[in-house]
Image 1: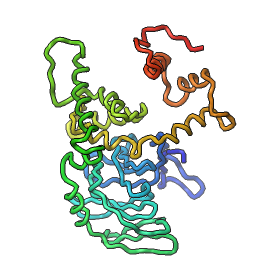
Image 2: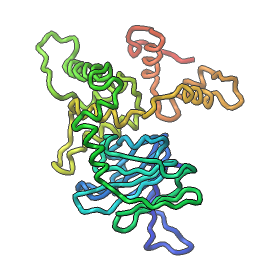
Image 3: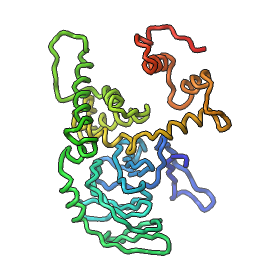
Image 4: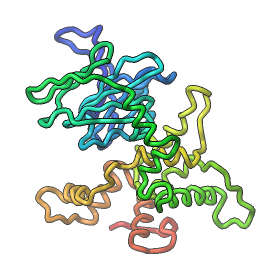
Length: 337
């Protein structure tokens, strides 16, 4: 899978000439698995994409840029296909299948896991799902079996009500809940970021408020153990920065604690970073015929020239931290041989 979203000009294409209008790379590491139009809930028009890392992404229908990343269903396997359900304008739902389950989600998407419900559909695996025109029934196929399902949105609303409102569902996603160490740590980093922006060493009176600068988001995420790529950092910042632009025409430069918690829950990896992926990465760098080791010069060259490039001063600073070489690595003249 090349992780590209391709748009075709069907009206002007012929049987022997399929015209490509645009090709946009929409994923960095995950694999897109399904795409559908997002119902017109907002003024901005979106494409809804589900990926192999249990995430939903809302892409601007015109620019194809990621506008929002949201936690998707985590029912055994990632989503295989999503379909829109046609209901009155004030009610919006999507249905989906995973490897063996069928489920529904209430819109608008916000990452709240209690807005989704799912149940076993096909023990041998589900391969397709379609909705009838009035969306009263869903049909799924798995193996040699076709099943017809009656849609009952009231179950979804009951599940969402039991999960709580406001930040409660998101605190449940944090280890230990609202009173757990992760939630407390996040709050401490939030207020420490305010001190950083006002200079830690100052003796002047500090103003403690409800917001921190948007530029502090990557530092807080890394302090919490989530290490986003530069592309993920850009997606997070843009998600907040342009969250009110369509309605007000203005960008946002600060973030509050509530939005930060939702951003963390929606963007962090669902299952963390397994150790085998680290081993696989080093095995790939070392080469298939290698002994699991890599030459220092080659490693430094790869880090500085491949993927998301790391500059030499940045690399020196990171290694100084890892090796506990305290002092300002950036002020030292470092040579890599």
